[in-house]
Image 1: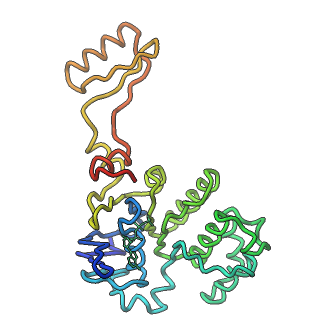
Image 2 (image 1 turned 120 degrees about the vertical axis):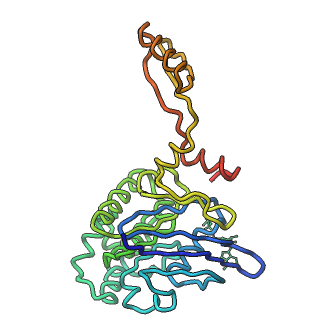
Image 3 (image 1 turned 180 degrees about the horizontal axis):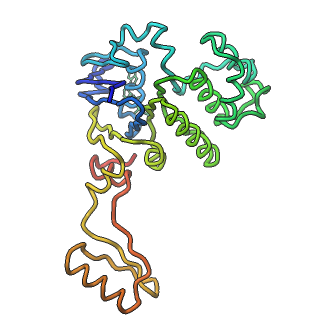
Length: 281
Ligand SMILES: Nc1ncnc2c1ncn2[C@@H]1O[C@H](COP(=O)(O)OP(=O)(O)OP(=O)(O)O)[C@@H](O)[C@H]1O
């Protein structure tokens, strides 16, 4: 499958500060990739480099098979959507007028505005000025703008950080639909559940390097310990090994009618991150 993003030995320093030490990874067309890491680990810096807003200090970066210099060309930029926290919305204009400006810029039919407002759950705020919106609503307008031109590649820097659970769910649904229609998505998040829900593969960023990069379920099963937890009658909890002895134990509980549930002891992505780095996300 074609690689949409290829990063080899990427380095980025700001003066003496090394933000990215040695980052290598690739993203295939149609994937949703999650970049996970604690505050200051270099997630935003990576997105800014991949969208040609920042120059790398070293390494080789290709997006759509082209170098970052050429990526600034409008023919490539039109294929990319970006959501970062610097929203760049016009405060005094309405939601609709902000999006209409983008339609003019990208030569998009204005009927598309209604579609994206449905996607981000903001149809009723269409005529409201940006300055009157909450932080979460502004974040949703910025997202609407990022997907207005149906980009082939979408970068999202913490897309749901200001949203309540209902809107988060709504946005997740919209992103899944966009991905099913062919958009490759690269997102950063602190939210492990979001990563599990949306991402085909996740990368853990730690000390300026990518430490693990794989499907969430694969990472969890690779790092699970060899035990399962049993819930027995009377709410008794027992942990048994997944070996012959454990199997006998489980069999006995079943025979005696004691066993209520069995759960595998796979770690969550958050547990894995702590195990790997000694740091909470
Ligand atoms: N323009 C800049 N000048 C100097 N240092 C910077 C600059 N931008 C980022 N950094 C530093 O680079 C490191 C990585 O920052 P970055 O914003 O990429 O982290 P992040 O993982 O996105 O964090 P957060 O989750 O808080 O958004 C941090 O130590 C930050 O202080």
